[in-house]
Image 1 (cartoon, rainbow, N blue to C red):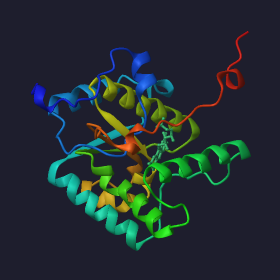
Image 2 (cartoon, protein in one colour):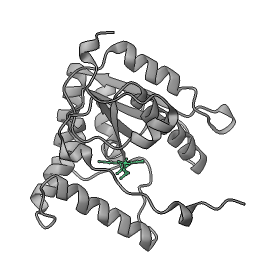
Image 3 (cartoon, rainbow, N blue to C red):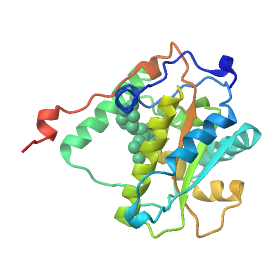
Length: 230
Ligand SMILES: Cc1cc2nc3c(=O)[nH]c(=O)nc-3n(C[C@H](O)[C@H](O)[C@H](O)COP(=O)(O)O)c2cc1C
């Protein structure tokens, strides 16, 4: 492996370290990810558990010119049309979750230097989802399964595997529901059959150092409120 391509970011040496250091990365170096690194991550991620070993996922890993073209098409779609996801995006939340989501927005806009009242700036920031926040590789997770609750759990297990394995390679990631907002664009660009639904995607790459956005860590609720040991 070309050592010069390895980011200055620390590599997680245990699952615990990967869990503790992982957070969503929204600014990347353009440095390409060596093919063997991508292969290691995604081939290992296929060991994820699923309901009765049904393995509802297909995974599309896109780099180079094809990724650029996809970014252009998705950005254009986001500027010209409304999201049309093939999954049910949640519409309501308990009030404490609403507060966490509001706080997240405030904090991200804060570190990005965006005034929350500036809709134009917020829209521009949102658009960065579709150019994968500058990451060298984009990933789309698709499925031909009926999208029931347990398929969602299976795909979540798969997603977390990828996020943690990426940390072991010194890579950052951002899981993105936004990448499922324009499935027809993804379907056209990747030549997918109509019955293969585009669930979501993620950006993956070497985190940009000295980035305020990347330094930002979301808080978690107190474990005493969430865990009960008997
Ligand atoms: C299913 C899912 C969808 C997400 N969609 C987006 C997205 O579209 N855009 C984005 O910037 N972050 C997205 N995120 C990242 C979350 O905002 C992030 O995981 C959460 O705020 C916790 O922060 P952390 O990942 O930095 O620990 C998503 C995360 C998950 C698990």
